[in-house]
Image (cartoon, one colour):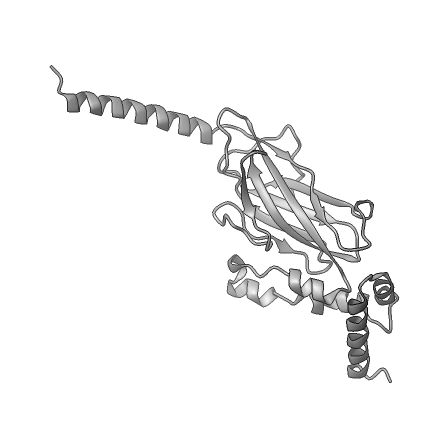
Length: 237
C-alpha cells in the first residue's frame, strides 16, 4: 500500500509535468502582434491633421520590412520597434508603450521615455539628424493564455523644434544608455546643429513663425530675451 507521502509526490509530479508542458507550449506558440493606433500629446497650435507618424515592428532589424498582420513572432524573436514622423518642425518623444492585453497592459516604456522592462526592450534611441525618428530593440515575451496574439501600443509627445524649454524638459535620460559608447554620442538635443540652424533668429523665418504662433505672453518674452542674448553672443551687431 502506497504511503500518503508517495501519493502526494505522484500528484505533485503530475501537476508539474502538466504545468511545464503548458509553459513550453506557450513559449513556442507563434504569436501575432496587433499594433494599436498611436496616441498623440500635441503642443499648442498643432492638430492631429498636422501629424504624420508611423509605428512599425520589424523582425531582427529595422532594415527588414515591417511585419504585417499575418506575420508572427516566437518567444525568442528579436524585434525592432520603429517610430517615424514626417513633420520637420516637431521633435518627438516616445513614451507610455505597453504590450499584452487592452484590459491588463504591461508597460515596457514609461512616461519618461525610458524602459521599465529592460529584460524586454531597450529605451528608444533617436535619430540625431532630425529627432523625429526612434528605434528600440528587444523581445516581446508577453503571452496571453489561450490567445495567439498580443497588443502593442505607444504614445508620442511633441515639442516645437524652436521650443528649447520643452526640448530640454522632454529629452529622455535613461539608465540603460549610460555605456561609454552611448555617452559619447549623447548630445543635448536643443544644441544639435540642425535645431540651431532651423531656429536661428537672424537667418531663418522658422523662429519668427514659432514666436508669433505662441499663445503664452511669458513664453514670448522669454524667447525674445534669449534671442537678444543669442544675437549679442554671435556678434551680429
